[in-house]
Length: 114
Image (cartoon, rainbow, N blue to C red):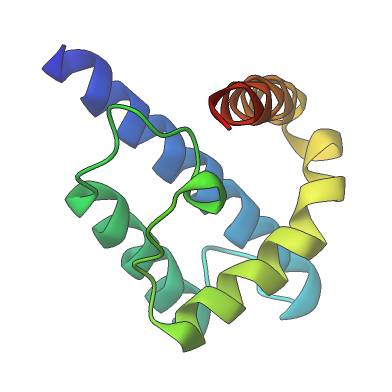
C-alpha cells in the first residue's frame, strides 16, 4: 500500500512539474529548467504533496476538501493550471489523458457520495 501511495505522489509531482515547466517556457520564456519563481512554486507543490495526509484517498489537490496551499501559492498554481491544462495534451498526451480520466472518475465518485 505504501508503494502505491509513493507512486501516486511521484506521479502528481511529475504532472505538476510538467505543467509548471510548460507555463515557464511559454510565459517567462525560460528555455532550460525553471525560473526562480517557478522553481519555488514547484518545490512548494512537491513539499505539499509529500506531506499530504489524504494522498491515499484523493486524486488531485483541486478535489481535496482541505486546501493546504497558502493563498498566494494557490493562486499561482491556479494560474498555471488554467494556462497549461488545455495545452499539456500537445506536449505530454499520455499524462494529460490519464489526468482527465482520473479527474472524471473522482468527480463521479464525489457526486455519488453526496
